[in-house]
Image 1 (spheres, rainbow, N blue to C red):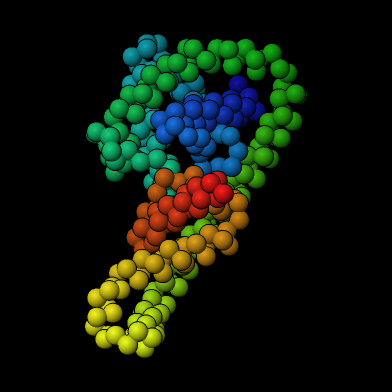
Image 2: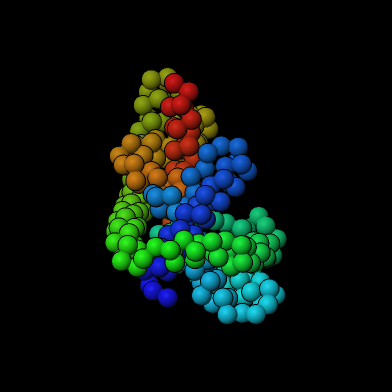
Length: 269
């Protein structure tokens, strides 16, 4: 079995995984939900899982063995992928915290059981037809096609990684700007308003609390930051489920919310 063929399988199953994930999430939310962290229409974790299913489980003799192996393999793959992306980019692309029997929201028993069933479907239902197609194409045609796919996929990975790194830098910069400006601007607001309205300082601070003012400044800073972001950075923001950085995780989640509000308002106009 040639590596070229295996890579084509990987891309094909990544695309099928993206189709499944996008349809499922779009139906669930009743709106278009372009899934996956990458720009292109593929979810690599499905490609990796399907290829490992074929390579590892192809030699197993019973459905039960394939089912159990896929359950364990999917749990390991999901947990390790979620952990790695969180450590690298401080973001997660799925969260099972709301589902029963989950471990840190990275994996859960219901989904692992579902992937066990999916492993059976791929190995016995889908892959025989995929094999027929790839076997019918000579290797000297597969190789340039695989190289073309690899170039696109590699460029996508590089662009997405760069966008995620830039997004984290922007979040950290935004947080520093908020912390640096909040006290100075709040005191200036109180003083200017007091002079204009001839009210007491204590009375004004009761009307405009530091918490309310900070929330207002956060929203303004997030809007300013979003206006400086390019398409690939906003795509990376939208594709993530949540941010988990210890300093600016909450700020990242608020940025997602503000971005969604701005998109809704732009569609209404």
